[in-house]
Image (cartoon, rainbow, N blue to C red; front, top):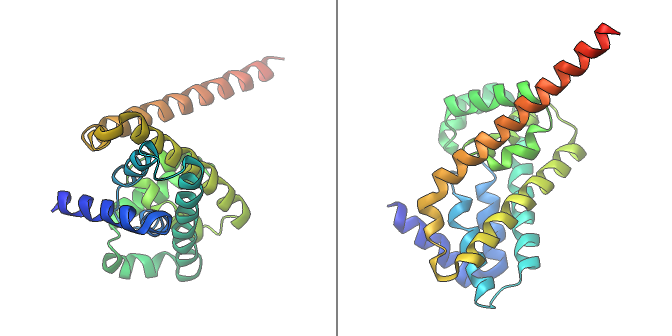
Length: 205
């Protein structure tokens, strides 16, 4: 079933071109469990073949990402948490994942929107708690565009680098996700420790 879906996504990009990328990445940025690791590397392969341009791939994929993210944001903004928890299952929203994402957002604040693009599961749901929390729309959009642009560019370049072996990325997607999570957590711990030391230094003055 998974292979069928991957082939279906590839066909959409191959036949639909840039609009196909916009469509799939818009779905990927909502609560739909579409893996960007199965979409963007193939676009990178088409860049490798000279059928697409790197700049346009990033532009249109990021357009799709912001469309899907804004859709989820406004659902959270106007419908609220009770509606999402009641009807979310009809939109493939896992309540446990949503609750974990809400805690993640509350703990790390608005900048979560930026680095959540690199974290599995959370990147699909993070826009909902941002809308529920009435996050500033301009800040939300800016962080989304930046984070999505970096992530899309990373996957596209991997697809280009691997060429005909672009599909191998799927086999290592979990390893990539884990490595990114470790990097983000390590950075968060470093920043927290630096802040604690700075406060301790100020208190001793």
